[in-house]
Length: 68
Image (cartoon, rainbow, N blue to C red; front, side, top):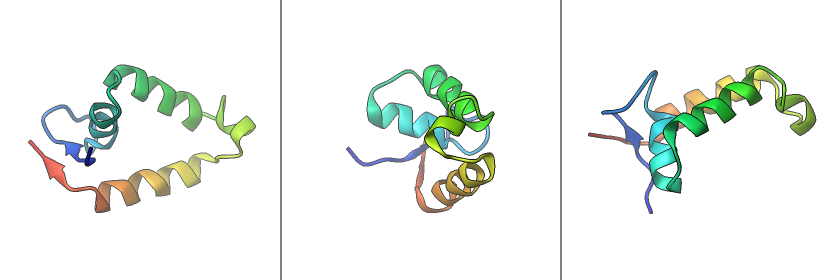
């Protein structure tokens, strides 16, 4: 499947909602996973900093096309 940002179910840019739709999972679950990683609970063990996750999110926002 092609990935799109979901512009109908967005909180910020629709990136996580679109990813959840493409992966066939719950948007809420993906948002919770993202927040846990962003706050460092899981990011520390994976070696992902909040700054890196912010950059990745905004790059995805810029390059993944939006769809209603």
